[in-house]
Image 1: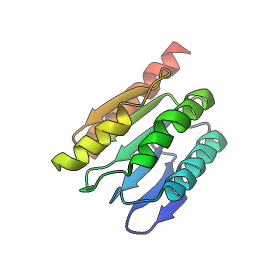
Image 2: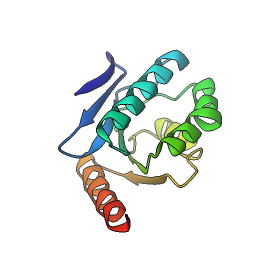
Image 3: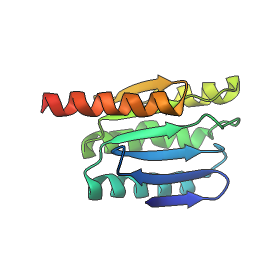
Length: 140
């Protein structure tokens, strides 16, 4: 189920079979308004489906996030996600060095008990989500 789509840049979807919200990135060249809309849509989907795991597939990305996006993410949005109950973000890391540095910049802002995990492939990311979901269920 698609929650947000900015053609050629980012698609956000709820994946019921995997129990996660997928951020499928092609490029980080989104505006602050676009990323805010994408994240609000993702959070609404997470709340609607009681789904508290995000998978960020950034493997195709070769660009960097704008500074204002990193600032909004770190100062405002990550706290809203934590308050809402997001448990983990698993990221398929980009292949390019510059995009990897950009991914690490937003990851450095993740706090408030949200687990952050990096993987090299989509399959590894899905397996990590399943492990995190199982651990979360066992701990409840």
